[in-house]
Image 1: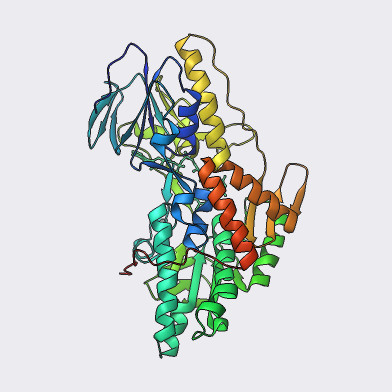
Image 2: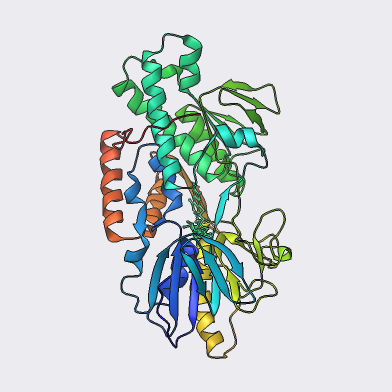
Length: 424
Ligand SMILES: Cc1cc2nc3c(=O)[nH]c(=O)nc-3n(C[C@H](O)[C@H](O)[C@H](O)COP(=O)(O)OP(=O)(O)OC[C@H]3O[C@@H](n4cnc5c(N)ncnc54)[C@H](O)[C@@H]3O)c2cc1C
């Protein structure tokens, strides 16, 4: 892999997501050699993927080159490849561009979409975990509008204009709100040949309320906002199947739709090679101790979404969101230097800063520890936090400009079918 030999201990970080990047930053210019590996050459800001899907932002506003992040880190290298297997005894990783030895291995590989074993849903639905998938959704929505504009078959037209989103967590809620804004502001202006009232957005959630990880106040408010935007919310509803045309559920609800977006859950993305016992069965996450050390391995660690750390406060592990990943990465960087210096390590304690979700223009919900609020101020806070969390000044400026422009003009500027999506 053409990494120079050095006297410094080699730390290999697999995954340039929130956890891996935070760890690489905390080891910048320290006395260790860092090799950051990712199968993509960019970091994805997943919380704003839904804005790419709904034509609000271009993908390069929410992605950032990993080489640029580490450009001033003296002993850090980036390699674009997928890690296929770990040989823990020999301390080697196998990739499609060769093998690499490590002194310390950090697994920060995140998660993938969970279809709960349903192959038909997997084959026909649209996931939204990666930039290319978000672009697929954007293309399909716009292609559906174009097809609906020329279709003279009522049933076909309705299936093209029926959008079904499965999963009422923050991703599903945010996407449903954003698609509703396309219906309310873009369709009547751009597609005068389509009756916008025919377009329907259905949000299906298995739990009794949307945003199940948030407070009841947030769920109630979010549901009210969704109703106002015209989204049909179906709680206690599980999708049984989808063959590309018909959505069947556990209730009488049957929907005809050309588009089913699957935001119903994720599962860990472990790498082959470690003892099967350390990968938890239900979540596919590595079981780690309070120092993010994978159980039974002295020099292998796991971070972020892929790590399951059981604590008194979080007996089922930390929530799979950005903050635990960032905080674990930062602490593990410091702990690793302590480990090398044979100093005692510090236990990870999650600082929960609260959670939030936006439903649309002037509509968001925020849960802080002692304060819960919704509406315009929550939306403003949501925008500020997301803008500040984006990697790179350029991306912040572009996103800020886009949001301001969209707000003033009720517009979504990225309505381009650059790469048409071929639905199977
Ligand atoms: C649509 C969506 C919306 C979200 N919204 C929010 C939100 O609003 N707020 C929030 O806090 N969280 C949100 N999350 C969750 C948040 O994005 C994750 O918790 C966070 O990304 C976890 O960080 P991570 O570093 O563990 O994994 P990731 O950020 O997923 O990074 C994993 C990296 O590992 C790489 N990788 C995986 N396997 C390999 C391999 N074998 N070899 C090489 N590279 C590999 C991947 O390419 C990827 O870059 C959202 C997630 C999604 C999908």
